[in-house]
Length: 361
Image (cartoon, rainbow, N blue to C red; front, side):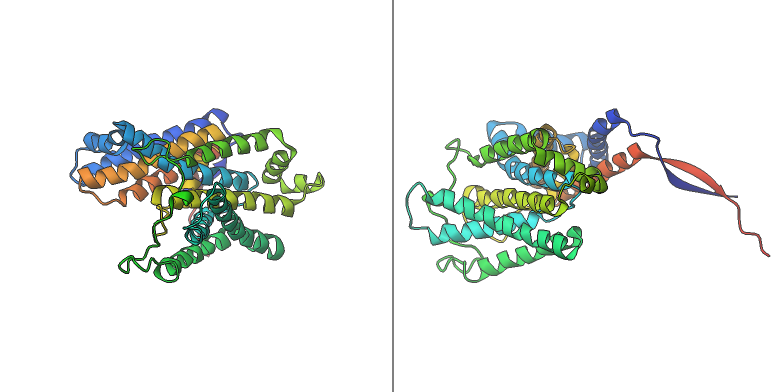
């Protein structure tokens, strides 16, 4: 007899476990991280303290947490609209980059302009650029039935190469000693700081407003109801007369606008110019944020803070422990892996089946 294992669908999913799954994934990530640090010859507890606790040991750390959580929250709230409708948009990274590139271009064009309208114009154009980039994916999906996972991933790389072309070519600062970066933006095109001595700026309020708006949209409006029904059962949505293509356009354009706003807020706030590295991967990390937060606004808020902490922890581990900064991506990857594994085992169980060996005829 040959013993084999297969997955069997459970009669029903545990609602309690669906909410405990992210906590279990975090716990497993911490255990795996401790083992990883030990394998690298570091004290596990001290290393975890350096990665997750030390970055928040002072006010500067907390303001940096808000600085990094803001763009994650904006992108994740947009992705939530898509994922609720079962539109698997992986393109928030490209929409973030296009928002930063487009807004940065306008900021450079208005570098000598003054007036209250300058900054809103920059932010609006950046959001529209992110929206336009998402519109390409919406067009390909609704008109040609192209798989949005593939199209949005490919559009991410095109957006990145556009950014590289810009900072190495027409947008490069002629007085920048040939470094691939633009000129520093003017004060009129830069987001105001909340505290003078810290980098936290008013873009955090954009993220909190977006969280409240998406929450209200999904729970209090007919459009939100239609999006949820489309995600749960396309046939039921069609029977009810809900237009899938219109909802697809709405979800993708909204996500693109929010990701674009996150991108332009990053370049006009934290970065202050265009560089090849305006995004440390916020668009990809926002996918983890959306699922870790169970696509609920409050959950996404806490998940964005956790993922922001991994960016800070990676920097702290690099400075204090001499470890590569890529440790951030490793922790984020482990977190996503354990989250998916826990979610799988909520809906399915592993059962052993017996298969008799073939009998020679």
